[in-house]
Length: 274
Image (cartoon, rainbow, N blue to C red; front, side, top):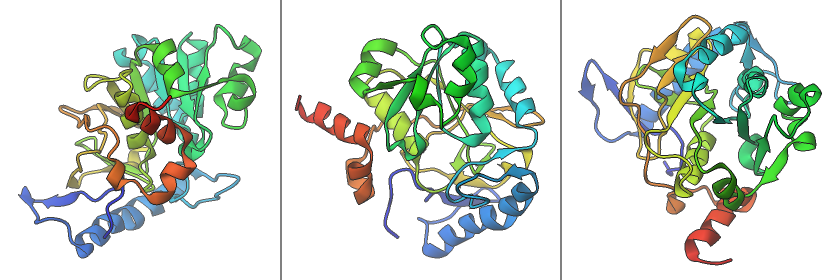
């Protein structure tokens, strides 16, 4: 199976025994855990997307109980002490983006699939009456500021906390999502320009039914989460994986470099081109 940057190709671990390098059967088994165990339960609590309905391979849904999960995350010191957050463009954390603006925090977010780059939401610049609009994917480009990687490096200096949704996650903080690896790409790009490092804290906001007991061995690019925040509890993860490899250019899907402008910018920055 072709390797893709950020795709879940980890090795399944059962009863403390590590399998040999993953075979197609192993990959099918790990994927089947998500489709057979998580998706049916998630469908009972997920809110359909107007574009993708219940196609969880295309988006990370909002869910009943997400306001409770948001409340729990905002009670965590990692959030309270953060001044600048990256919050992924997932449906389940739209309210978190709004809450962060209310709390006076600067929010960095990408468009869906990173196709239209990064956007900066600064509550000091955006009027209070537009904060909720700014937190929505359909509104942030109207009131936020488009920023390049060079501008992020110049303006932000340091991001304190990165938050994402995900399809499923285990107690190691390893995520199993749509398979596109966008959060891993976002981490790798921001790591490459020096605004995050391996001690930057990360959190996933999910429904309780998305927490897996199964263990996996991640790949070198897998970005683990220090906090798993559900509608019922906060799980703290010890030793969550934080990649330092940057972008593995040879593992990118061919269309990613064409579709994702910040990747092209980073490649130019690393090659010394203006």
